[in-house]
Amino acid sequence: MNTRLAVVLMSLFATRALAHHAEAMFDRSALLSSSGTVKEFLWANPHTLIYLAVSDASGAPHVVVFECGSASVMKRDGWSRDTIKVGEKLTVSYYPRRDLKPGGMLATATFADGTKLGWRTMGTP
Image (cartoon, rainbow, N blue to C red; front, side, top):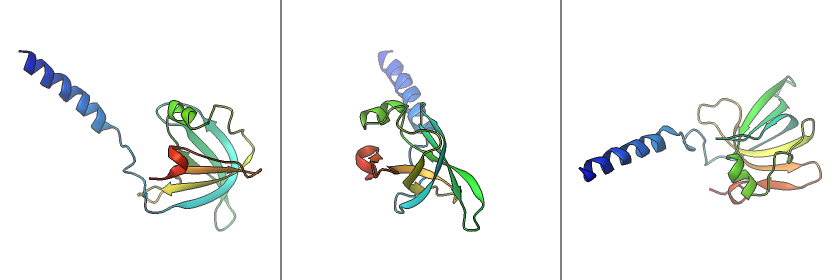
């Protein structure tokens, strides 16, 4: 009876772990860079998000989303909900999405004064 209960409980937890996409949707073999103006910094779980207004090759503006770690993970790496301000200039290095949509997973953020912050030891795989 205890064995059956243990198997059922392990199955439930394993299913939850598999349901999360992890980082499979990002191409960790390519590191790109983009600069723009912060439109929003969402300090949240399960992922902190940076919304950056950038210009495409023709000069047309659009907003690109960069995914970061959870608020608790980001905090351990020196971030806070006040780290990024709406309206400030920011350059991000990121791992692009595999589906080729704009945006990706943040590796580092470089501020106008040259300060650089990353998560997961500055974005190393």
